[in-house]
Image (cartoon, rainbow, N blue to C red; front, side, top):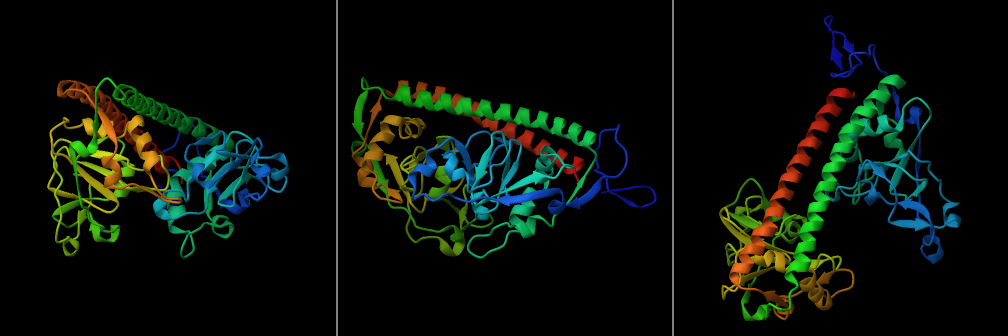
Length: 412
């Protein structure tokens, strides 16, 4: 809302293209859109998921546009669902706040069906889907988190969504806003591609450079020592108080670089500090000992540079240290995440729904070790690309902040 000189509230955005005048109209989502949720064809019939029709699940609604889904269903299975046209706005309506899924949304670029965890918006003619997408990106996080209902799993519903009020301009102003926002989204998409290419380059170098049988084949049991870790839960950690930082296994899965320091780690609440623990040192490695899939089992990070304050390894981690000085700082983080090392882990991982690995299993794995000078050169090369990756993510974050600011100013 903008206030004029007569202190009358005007239904206009704070920032607007100068050629447009007059107040925006206002209505409810239910009046402007038909809302539909989807369903899941019976998986008892395997033929249902052997088709070519998009079937979108809630976890796939991450980008502005969604072109294809992870699973496709048959035309026969699609008959029991609504086939959404190209350009339909879809949001995720199920999920916990912590999983970052509920409330996300995308616009379809292929005719698609959706699961029951999604809700689609079909315009009745006045508001364009691209305008709705941008309006929702301004309000979506609030809607997805604050207004969801339920006990174990909070959900959005038709009854909640249809009541939200949306302010909108005429078609020409909508089109100009959509074109402007799409330019920002194109730049963000380009930056994401830059990041993806850097990640692929780092992974490719890591996998191909370090898998070298000409180097010394060295088993971890010959130079690594493993220490006990604590089992503190998230409830015993925080970012406001505490003298000792704690590396929880969930954080290992979220790190985007192989080497870390402890500056961003949570602290152990004073009353929860364990009686016995082993402090991490520069060059120490932490492995995640559990994961729901073998792709992430034993993912590791190495403490590099200066560790800010005392740090210990926590729940579902394995804390390892090179006690023979066979490696330079930084090399283990790359070697232990390489393809040839991870293939050994996958053969040893145990479990059905959740896979696990032990320190004893790790001890039986090997790495190829060149001399220390070659290790330094390898670390220097790979870390230079990781530094570019960090800068790339910082640039992306700034673009996203800029977009959020403009959405707040240009939409009501």
